[in-house]
Image (cartoon, rainbow, N blue to C red; front, side):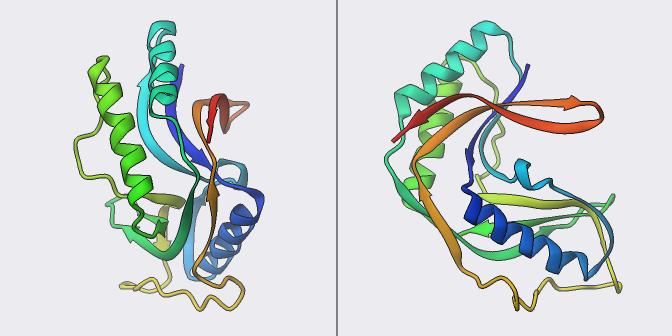
Length: 179
């Protein structure tokens, strides 16, 4: 199974993110926009996991736990890529979020997971392979429909399964820890 650990977002936050996506669409020629049900904040990408690794991931999530904390979406940005930009919604700096991600990473690495070594940059992917109208676009959405910042209180962490079902990318929570 292809797995990752994430914070799934409540319906209010997803609705606001979809509004951001709709505003963004008006500035693009094309892009693959994330399905509303797939919008999430990744904490750790695990990759292909066997049953023993899945159990170890669940144990790591339980060991770290989650204490409720605010999650605030406060900006939109992009990662420039040759095949098209990745556009994301940025999350305000949060010590509880960083501590949660760091704790998960440490526990997962201690049981043998090989995780990304670059600095954690919390973001929610809105679209991939984006080409903007015009050559050099600086992302600054008018936010007429979507007021920034917005957010929610995080109360759970999910172990997610990623799979293609009938040609569609589907993320399913297979385990959760609540705060």
